[in-house]
Image (cartoon, rainbow, N blue to C red):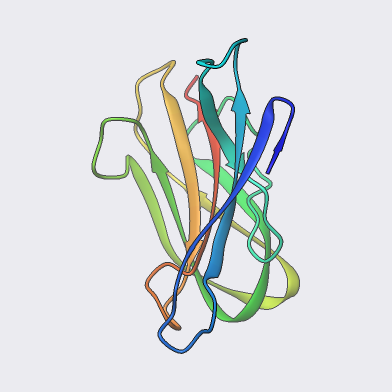
Length: 144
């Protein structure tokens, strides 16, 4: 769905026992510039059952970083990764934060190593019931 310079795209997977695809995240994109060839950039996710509200989009994020949001679910295990473009592996990771409940707050601290001025992606994910990653949330930050 697009609304001016904003677009939201549902992404997910099809479970063997589900009649329709399951939504893992709603990816929020922004269009930068004018014209038909202006690029779309992922700026984060807009979600309801797993959110990443801290740090905010575009924040300056030093290590260790406090990450948090809200989760709805039973017996969740949240993995937090800090990633940067061009790397196949995280520059920092914290696993397996037990969480659950109805719109329950969660938070974790993750240490990472990144060069100053780098764009980083903070990823929170949970799964393990029907798929390794069933829900995820992301936000972009910069290393000071």
